[in-house]
Image 1 (cartoon, one colour):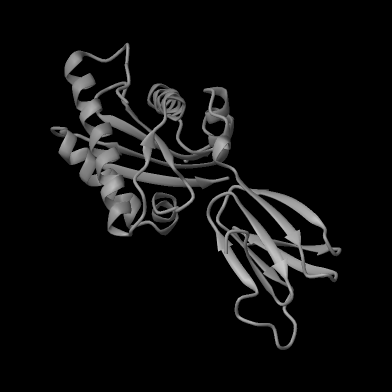
Image 2: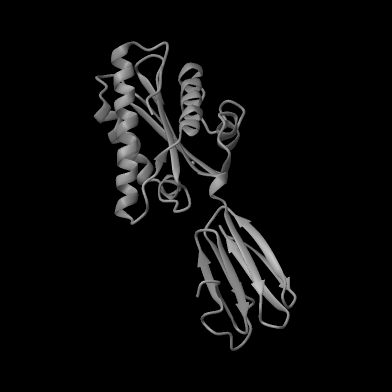
Length: 243
């Protein structure tokens, strides 16, 4: 028995024309179980459940079928990337992540035996676990495919659609020039804001906006947001417009 899995960062029943009905049923059961157990895992970590995306499912299905039929394995096995495959399937993305795995069997194969390998394998692998617990993804597409009923390939895409882009409108009402730092996903940028200046920032990840640290800065000179919001910079503080 061989088992392998990979992860890549930049996130429905599937028809398999070459498979007989029993295999179709098995594949559908595994896909359903992966979806259920992924959301259960997120729930245990106080994260919202993912919804199914038809476009991500289409991309996952095409790639799983490609690997099953070609025997090639890897996130770039078809010469493309997870994000490009998602886009080709019609998914307008802000973020796309991907987990893949395969298992080769010499004995009886059941939906339970495949699920037992795929899901725990991802959970026990830090990069895969990170994808499963990404707080900024909202949708998923899952597919399993085989061409010989011995080796099964699983693809799980995690995504955040472009329509869910986080848009921040920041206004400097402090009466003096302010320097703010916008940080997300391990990257940051510094923005100089003149009095009454307004900047708009679009992000795909939870974002922290803070006043540039100076000696004596107060604790409320920082705010973290996970959705579109209007922020106001005042003397020594930054807050949402509603506060």
